[in-house]
Image 1 (cartoon, rainbow, N blue to C red):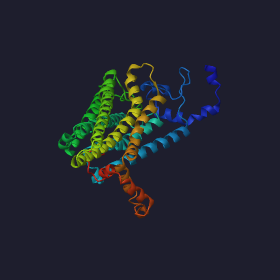
Image 2 (cartoon, rainbow, N blue to C red):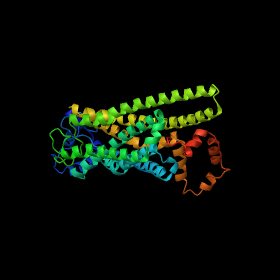
Image 3 (tube, rainbow, N blue to C red):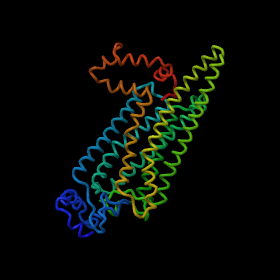
Image 4 (cartoon, rainbow, N blue to C red):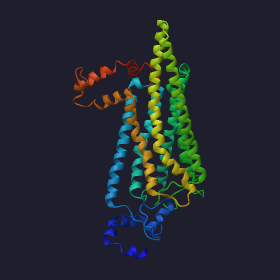
Length: 404
């Protein structure tokens, strides 16, 4: 095997010459001058394992770094713009000012902060494994990443509780759940998330030996984990809330379906006209609540699909002596980040109120907006046709405060 390695062509070696030189310059003798030693500070295995003990791992090609940079930068840009659009939409559209949408605003704020603060540096560390910004900034970057992820899952948990009370006890919900309560809950979520992220990382509670991570090897920006901290972060702040959220949404959908069936039976039975009017109003309310629940349940499903691989690896890392392949680790990480990108598209796909608000904001500066909203245009005719649905009109006019 050693002879085979020595017989490799000069062109193969030149393919890695640029990145290998950059790697050695960045190491600067800090961690021994051997490029394989950088992986000792990550619970991962090299990108391309040559199978030769003691041989330097093959680094990324220059073209690979360029393509990855373009792709990850595109993900970052779309994440920022999409969530900023959600924030502007909720803040500027009074029809969307209700407790549920304020929780969505909180979720979009966390996702936008992820795109602005975290993803640029995640792109850097993904393309180039040597951290150039020092251990202090590395720990702040990691703590911010953990904070925003925790805010997302706890906000989804709060949204599920909001939907549960809106459907099961609607009168109590309308009387007790206010915008002020939503802002208090959101502030508590941000405070708790920051505490469990920043304090352990900057005190050293997350490491095996109790030292503050990354100061012993400042060129390696690593999120070190001990078994206790990994379980503390993953189970109470991800897996347990996710299970509760799934149970709650199943209960909400069951209750909604049961109530709609009961109202349909009353309508068929021929009740009095006044009673029929009240039941029709309640039925429209249930339709609105069902649409809101389906929209938010889709957010939870997307969050689960995107983040389960990462949190599974996150929980397993301290228990594995051989480490995790870096391809798998980075793929799981960026799959989780993609969740922040797709949320705005889910709002637009499932909910007409958000979709129409998006169109108004995006086309506000278009030169052809007068044509788009002209009563004789095909767009306006389609919208006038869609407005014949009573439940849609009630949602768009803000008559049902429980609608998303």
